[in-house]
Image 1 (cartoon, helix red, strand yellow):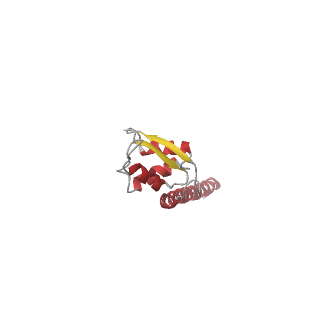
Image 2: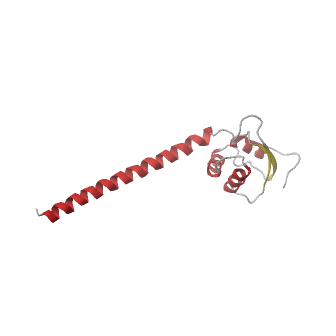
Image 3: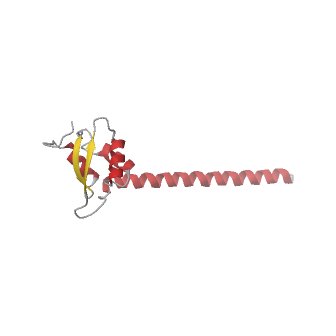
Length: 127
């Protein structure tokens, strides 16, 4: 074997090892992110403890769960709009959320906010 073939073989082995390390890192990182989101879907606390801050939001009929999450993040009700969207899809209230104007609090969890939006409103309904 001449030196050119030896260098080529060594470089090929180094590149294969580097590619394997990159793939393993990406799989590990992806699994970590997925685990974090999966854990937080069911355990995410409210933005603030205690009484919190009262916030009025209006949910329209054409808003998607992602739109609601973005609105809530903008208003300071949730810290992560994407996480709220996932919580919405896993919530028992996902089919019952109604359009309207709601008085929510930063001391409420996402599940508590969805429960309020799914309950029958007697006043302040925007629909």
